[in-house]
Length: 499
Image 1 (cartoon, helix red, strand yellow):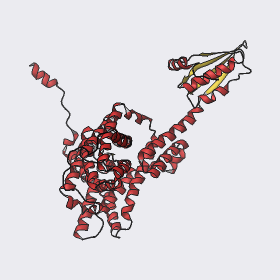
Image 2 (tube, one colour):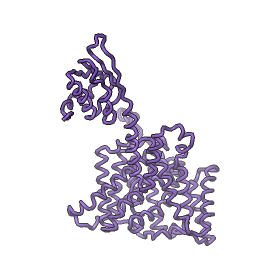
Image 3 (spheres, one colour):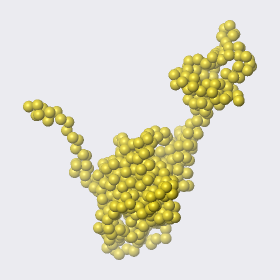
Image 4 (spheres, rainbow, N blue to C red):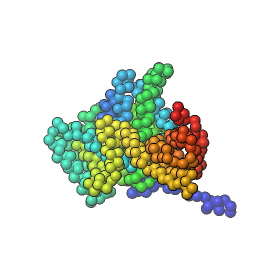
């Protein structure tokens, strides 16, 4: 009887949502569309890194499959990326593929270490204006990457792109049962094959692999010299990869209105890069363009689409390479144009929005976009955006400290009341707000409504005390809250003010 009761009371395991036929179909088709879109991207990034196209394709396969299991953000796509290609390109060019692979493995290990140290928590310090700039810059870069495929090509490419765009804009108004990008790819491929239309194809981008990736270690000397050589590149891989991945995860959180574990995503990226390195891949991180195809264009929401994107990619390039090779680039260019247009935050540049938005927010967004476009590196753009936001915030808060004073009825004591946050920017102006020459012999500084954050603030209070002391007057600082009192008691008189 007790066993029956325990069986009844035992919590029921939740059924994965992708087991639903409707969700399963969506995830499978989304994975197929992403896999098709990944092929030319992976080949292009391989060329950018100076390695064989197979290196990028295998990296995309292993990254997608591994992150589907280990990652913290369901439905996000990780694969070989342009940002990582830019980081590892010089190493591959000067020292060869084996050193690149060693850097990828070490970069993955650094990402796991950073995850353990809680680097994902730093996401809270990225302002919304930086996120908007990140998204807008990404949309522009995605669109710009398609321009070379539209220059110096047969004129038939343009009507094909137009047809694909029409399909992707019009079909969702009729039905969403099948992803519009997949329909566009299939239709254009059939048209070009059966009509014998000579236009650039996926096969023109580079040779597709005809065998599976193999497990192995890079053939390098395992010495300290090798470590010092690859370590800077590994650190670059780790930082750039984590920043792009966490920013993309945050974006998908907002789009799907669901939370995700950024810490798990951080170490998941590390595991994926280590696995990728052992299989001879060039490493990677989250791909926001492919993620937008998966989440926004195709409606995927689970890990299944990410996993199948990697599996389909491998099957397509190894088993069905001849079929994939005839897909016209016009179809994939059209898909990426739709992704760019849907990714851009048009509301952020609307005149009405710009008119209402504080100028500082707009400056941060523009700085993020401009830096990203200048460097073609989203990570650098985000860093500059955050630094710009910090400077603007510091300047704004520096003027929020208010000092008022009253004189005791007997005229022997002046009481100053300080309001606001005292830190390195705001405390610099504090010293000049006291009347040292004309105040009575006793001065009280009431800190009830103030908070001391750093040594600069303590030094400012010390300077005030000293200026009164040189005139034979005494200062009493009262009503410090506990954290402020702690830092003040620790540093007061120890900062060498006046020496």
